[in-house]
Amino acid sequence: MAAPPRCELCGARAAPRRCPRCRLASYCDVSHQKTDWDSIHSHICHLLIPVLGPQPCFHSEKDRKHGKEQLLRKQESLVAVALSTAQGFVWAGKPLEAIPAALQALRFGSRLFGPASVQLVPIYLLLAEASTGAGRPRQAAKYLSQAQWIVLQTPECSAALQSQLHHGLGLFSIAEGNLEQALYHLANDVYLATAEFGLNSVEVSGGYFYMANIFFYQNKMDAANSLYTEVSSLWHAWLLGSLHRHQRALQARAEASPFSEEEEGIEDGMTEARRVEGTRMLCAALRLREQGPLQHPGETARLLHALAMIHYLGQDLAKARELGMKAFDLTKQLPQQDSLETIGHLLELINAQLSQTT
Image 1 (tube, rainbow, N blue to C red):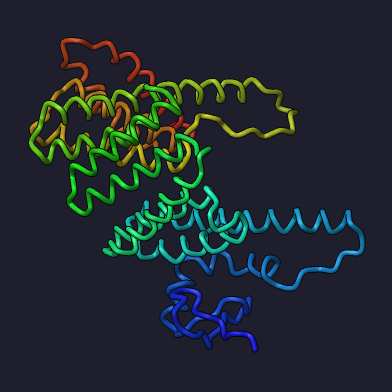
Image 2: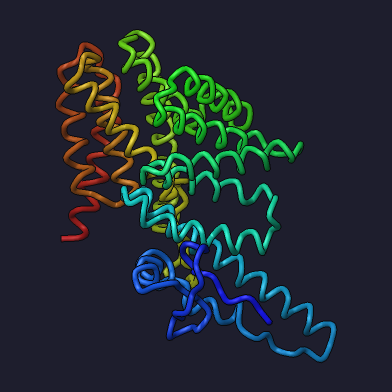
């Protein structure tokens, strides 16, 4: 006799309740069913039937191969939806809501890639981050240990993934109050990110930022100031490059034939993950520059300029204009006004786009 299904959310208790739509997700009680629905099940209910339901019978090897490829794509789509949904909740400051979605990503990712695959490491790290934010340190430590074990068992694991692992371990150590251990992991994060992406990449900035926060907390202002400056410098340079790529793409689109059927997206390298990460770090650094003991008008102007660019690329034009004007006015008061023209050009772009939308 087959074992009764376990609850989709907690996995601990028998689950007599089923989703009335897909009939594939089971729950121990109404509260767990509602929690899972609000987090992830409403997004993937329709995707479960073609993945977990009865599969068609194929009569040729060619059809069987095609059917297997289709099933793999559906499973990959399921993992991607669950992972992006969980990440969205974490970005929104809702770690509890993120956990069911991340667990679904882990469940289907394990089935798709194998239980010890390096492709599960980002999912474990997200689960650890959400669990830490939800006040569940024991669960977070468990997920981090699993991610660490997979990385140690995979000699060919990329420096980028190892960097992510040390970043997660560093953030957990900060939450636990173990600042020396946090500095160790964040230094490894920076080293490995540099090895993978280069010294001047924004991928390095996260490690610098959290190290700066620790030094600031420890009242080591020179070290904190230096690292915050490095963070703003990395993002400012990267955003200038993104802005140039965005402008070239806009120009190419304007010059394209009106009879062209191809509608290409504008490539500027600004993913949602990068936008959220950059905005969070730059806003935190700006608050310290404007209100704290690390005031430096030139750095404040650069942070305002960077944030104006990030909001412009994210199409929040009103916020981009507000920050751009602040950067412009502050730069006019500085002895060196090298960036005044660049900020002015950004404001022209913002105003031109605003005029098109009114």
